[in-house]
Image 1: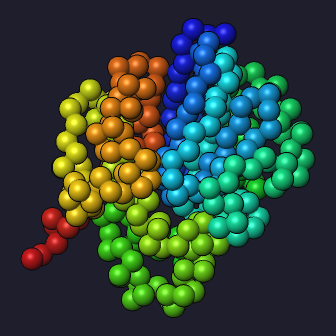
Image 2: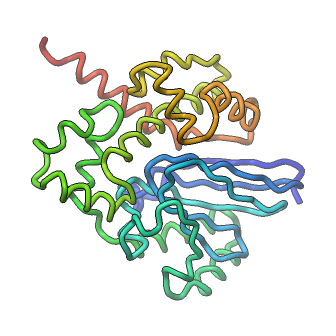
Length: 280
């Protein structure tokens, strides 16, 4: 068994570029790890090599999953709206659920064997991405457009009725079927995901925390609003969340989460620049 753990987020393969936000490889050291999964609006496909892949539905609160000592874990973080097409059922039926792949997909023993026999974790991750790209269905275009408008720097739920060709009731139903939660809940989760991206970036750079500034940047009314939402989604305050993340990943050369948080921060930066160029 390796002496220490490592964790690396990566950009997804081209076949998953529009379907997944990032993929990862985790090598676990001599001690098992209780890995915290924080709501981000999407589902995750996760596999401990040697075991069958599992599907973690969209989360409405943080949860922990054990990573076994000496194990290798690979995973795919799907974009919001892709869960229904992959699960083969309405996404809200698997919200907050952790399901064995054999409950959802055919020929799982063959896939499990292919992943376990891969010559490297990188090769296993490539094979898992091929499987997911083939198994996932086309996203709901209305929900896909709604997700873009629910990002923290966009208009939110109030603008959706005028922008989309469906009623509020239809959108809520289709959003729950594709994402697993309704538009308002998704907006809250995506806003918090904007905060977690800033936490990850600051810890990676070794920068100090700026909770008040991050709250405003992520779309919260103020730091008190962030605190309420952080407690609701993770059970801890923003300061505790930052401290726990810093303890787990700060200063670790073998932890790289850039591929998970940079797309969110870059998209926000582009939005700010576009607003600045608009005539007053």
